[in-house]
View 1 (cartoon, rainbow, N blue to C red):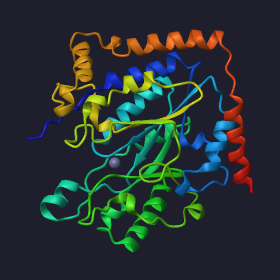
View 2: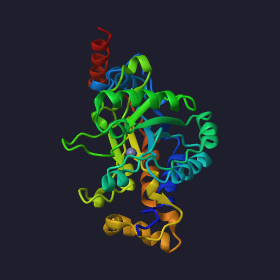
View 3: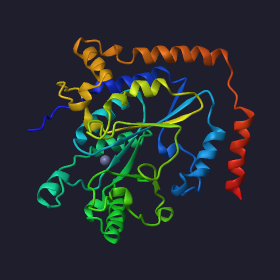
View 4: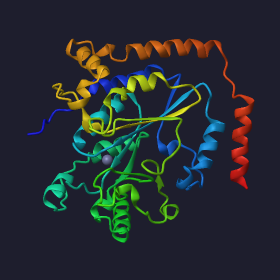
Length: 323
Ligand SMILES: [Zn+2]
């Protein structure tokens, strides 16, 4: 039987949240909703007007972070992460399914069936009132077995049904099944998104970022877990830039018995595990905190300004968009 335990101790993620809070003079945590979209629905070009506006109006002294969670399996672990975020007032976006299907049942038996999927409406309503967001994790192509017209109808139905509970304005396709020709959920031809007032922000089309970290498929045999340490990614963040952090909260829990699969072989992960097992979870983010203490001092003494060449480039983009 497959282990029920999480791959990663939750304190690895909460340590990141604590870092964001401790250095909130440097980090600005935003949701997709906070970005200045205007009428930019141009997902094919990754929303050029939004990006230009962000570059013109963001502070060159701040690091902008957008946190996205894909709520795939074990949704209760997402709500666990949400409560940790609530304690520190660090908002994020939870991408949820309208109906979750059991991929394993389909792959083994060829049957499509909905599986249990617990959405904590009370918690999410409370959080969305305080700046968190809920988006649509689309699996419409899976549900339609890659029939494009049917997928479009399912997409519309899902958005309509989810909007009965949440003000859904952003979506991201789930990985999910793969058709014999290699198509997945991100091959959907969506309905008129401008008319729906809905934006595609991740997976094939996306909002722009200077850098992105994701734990997606962290134990997949196709990927190297050795270079997926969030701490290393965060340590490399620079002021004036914008980053997305994408987690799958099903991987994180307080209950953690070290049964972590391939990730358990990565040296950074063994370091985290040793600290947790020796009661030193507080030290997981210590080096990164030290880095940001140094950055804080540097930002204090050295005033930042947008370089002239950079400013000209951004103004050029804005002019082109206005035309
Ligand atoms: Zn997913």
